[in-house]
Image (cartoon, rainbow, N blue to C red):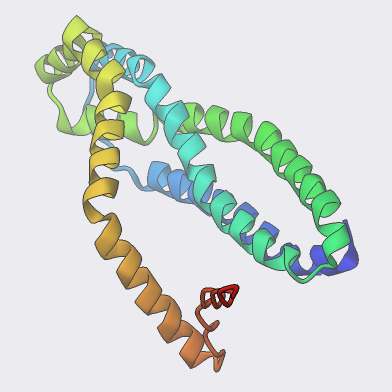
Length: 207
């Protein structure tokens, strides 16, 4: 990676790493501050059962926590790429993609394992404190039920259907507002807007 790209991306990489570290630190602080509550072996067993059923959700949450800093990093990288000579952009972009893939491959298992390890002292502590044994039993039964599993499987389809409809319904309004915002930002930066491309004049008719 060129020195220019390295200098431009270093703050973004640090921000991504700090974001992940902050998320883990927050979870650890929550675990430390969770109030002690009376319990029983039966409640602890039910909480462990609920957490086991929720493990796919915990793994998804840990992956999602990486997406935000990575999105910011990739956006910043795209902007920094424009500072490079055109002939170096493609190779540099591929190098960045490799670094990001390596980061994801190494960090995702770490986040997943830490989330699963911290879950009993954070989520588990809250469940144990605020749910009765009977409520925990009902919760576990619901999580194990075919209805819940079907609902979970349809979750992505339902979200996709809503997202597609929402985009189609708001595209015109949002794009117009984005254009207005872009013009306002360019004005604040003192950048003249690009002139509209005019259609070429028609060729004179042959006599």
